[in-house]
Length: 207
Ligand SMILES: Cc1ncc(CO)c(N)n1
Image (tube, rainbow, N blue to C red; front, side, top):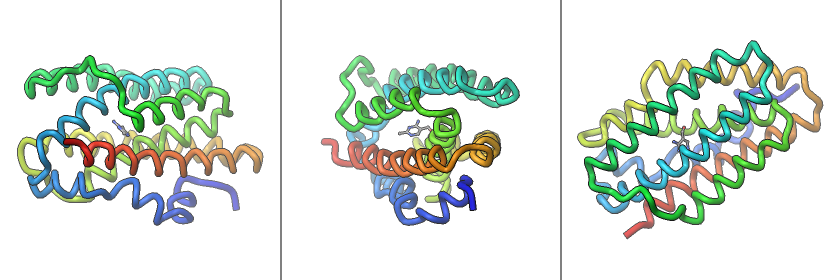
């Protein structure tokens, strides 16, 4: 049996769950997260999205042409998302010109390293990164203010549809690739799950 996105989730359910379920998200849903924790996440995630945008641009550069529409939609959405982060930071009076914390830096280095891997590995990692936030922000259930719009950003049906399209594109190329590349895609998936857990923990430990 070849690797598919569903198979990765099934075979690594526990480590995946650790990447998408965290006290940080639970406490957002309960309204008990501390401002310093939330603000640390907000600023570091803005820095993350800058690196993630670079990654998506490189994935586009490696993609077959018929995958362009979905990836270009993703890039356009990130343009809007970066501006939204800047607005949220202004509202909360947060300084965005700060260093990346170690976990954010490690995540950035991982995303940069993907450019030397075959496209099926890159698109699997891309799907996993987006699906982690899609599930992570959705699973706790509706969030109270001021967190509702954060949950809606990654939990909304349009974003869910985008993530499903990424899974389809990943599955298509995974089916045609070598066993070695499939193993590399699996390793990238596991690395995303671990980095996601670490990223929540980084913010949760702030203050
Ligand atoms: C840490 C992290 N993972 C994923 C995304 C996007 O899906 C994000 N904004 N931040």
